[in-house]
Length: 412
Ligand SMILES: Cc1cc2nc3c(=O)[nH]c(=O)nc-3n(C[C@H](O)[C@H](O)[C@H](O)COP(=O)(O)OP(=O)(O)OC[C@H]3O[C@@H](n4cnc5c(N)ncnc54)[C@H](O)[C@@H]3O)c2cc1C
Image (cartoon, rainbow, N blue to C red; front, side, top):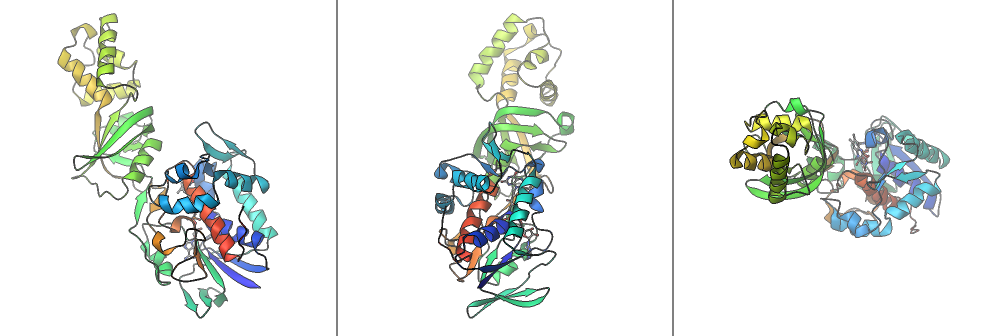
C-alpha cells in the first residue's frame, strides 16, 4: 500500500486527493496537510456562489482564457475539459447550471454545497486531514519523500504540492524551491485599479455595461478588451478591468508611469457615428440642456462627472453648442482617458507566476526534476481571467495529479 502526502487542502489539493483515492488500483493512504482549514478558500469564490467553471467546450478556446499557461493547458485540458469536469461533478451528485454569460455555478448558488460534497468524499475515501499544519520542508531521500510534519518526520511515496499562489509571501515557495524547482516572477493578477482622478468617489457604484477599453503603457497600446465595469471609491473594478489587469500584470505602472485607459462608454459607436447622433439629438432638442442629452446616452452621474472634468457648461442649451464643444463631448464619450496608478490594496484574486511550467509534465503534472512529485492548482505559473477559469485549471491539473500520484492511468 502506497502513501501520498497532499500539501494544501484548497480546491486543487482536495480534488487531487479524491481522484487519487477513487482511481488507484491499489489501496492508497492519503493525507492532506493544510496550514489552516481545508476548503476555506472555496467558500469565498464567486461571491459565495462558487463559479466553478466556464462553459467553453472547445479546449483550445478555453486555454486562450489564461494569460499565463495557455500552451501547457492545451495538454491538460485535452485530458480533462469542461464537459468532462461538469460530468465529474454531476456524477458525484452536484447539480450545476450555466448562466447566460457561460459561468457555471451549483444550482444552490452556494459554495457550501461544493465544500460539503468534497468533505463527504474525503470522508468516504478515509482521506486523512491534518489541519493547522504548515509543511515547511520536504526532502527526497532515495525513493521516499521525507516530510517534516507536526507529528515528526513522515515518509511518503508520492507528494502533491497544491499550496496555491501567494505573490506577497514568496517564502511559501521555498518548499518547492528546495525540491529543485524554479519559481517564475510573482505578481498579483485580477485586481481593481486606483485611478489618478479628482473626485472619483463621486461616481462610486455606477456601473457601465459593455464599454470598450484600450490600455496604453509608455504610449503604446498594450491591450484592448470590452465588457462591464464599475466605478469604485478609488477607481474601477469589474470584469473588463480584471481582464485588463490580468493582461497587464507584469507591467510596472505607477503614479509616474500610469496605465492609461481609453474608455469608449458606447462600445458600438465611434467618433463619426456618435458625432452624427449628437448632431441629430441637438437638432431635435434645441432647447434642452446639453448635459441632459448626453444623459440619454450614458448614466447621469457619469455625464455630470465628465462635464465637470472637461470644464464643459452643463446648462448650455443644445442649440448654442459650438462644433468645438461637440467634438469635445464626442471625444470624452468614446476616448475618455483615465490614468491607473496602482492596484487597489488587497483586491487581487490570483497570483500570476509560480512553478515554472517547463519543469512539469503537462500530461501527468509530475515534476520533470523529481519523480513522484506532482503539482496542481495556483501554485503553478498558470492564471486565468475571471469567469471560473482559475478553478477549472485547479480541477484539470488536480485530476491529472491525482491520477498520477494514485498510480492509475485511468482517464475519464
Ligand atoms: C475572493 C476570491 C474569489 C474567487 N472566486 C473565484 C471563482 O468564483 N471562480 C474561480 O475560478 N476562481 C476564483 N478565485 C480563484 C480561486 O479561488 C483560486 O484560483 C483557487 O482557490 C486556487 O486553488 P488552490 O487549491 O490551488 O489554492 P488555494 O485555494 O490557495 O489553497 C491552497 C491551500 O494550501 C494551504 N497551504 C499553503 N501553504 C501550505 C503549507 N506550506 N503547508 C500546508 N498547507 C499550505 C493553504 O492554507 C490553502 O488552504 C477566487 C479567488 C478569490 C481570492
